Image 1 (cartoon, rainbow, N blue to C red):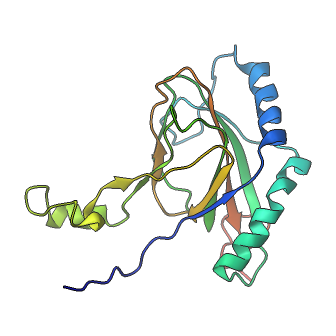
Image 2: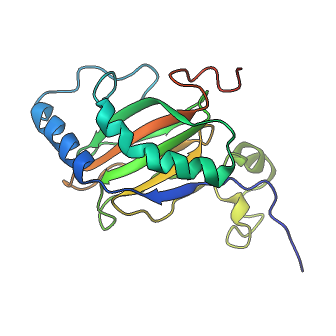
Image 3: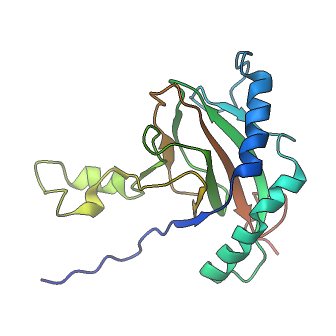
Length: 203
């Protein structure tokens, strides 16, 4: 018996030293950790502490240049990739992030800056074909262990310092943090054109 998996979704994983980034994020977190979350971005259904708009200084953003250069080479991108959105996430005990995508982005990234694989959960990714498969099949019809393409979601191992890059359309979430240990990530979108997520394929 032979089979071929066609059109796989590829996720890239790199590793980047987090010393400066972690120190910066912990300083910011300690400055506001006793304040309540007073606003959640429109469309979000979660309780994670997230910071946008100037929370990430330019000199720290430059840490990612080496990863973006490698990523450009790895995917054969003809244009220079830019970070056009970047935000900081602090998951305290019981914090989570609901399933979502980063459309209309091009690629998106998550950098695990404060992360213990013994107690924290990595990003959960959802099967983009699940709507079709759930209509066609159910658990009693096919053995999912023999048909991994039918699985609804998946995770893979990451460690502190790992940075994953994935297509922005891929729906994902963060499970509830069931520990008192802080989980912190830096997320950003990648585009061909600087500072504009909605012109991915423009001139």
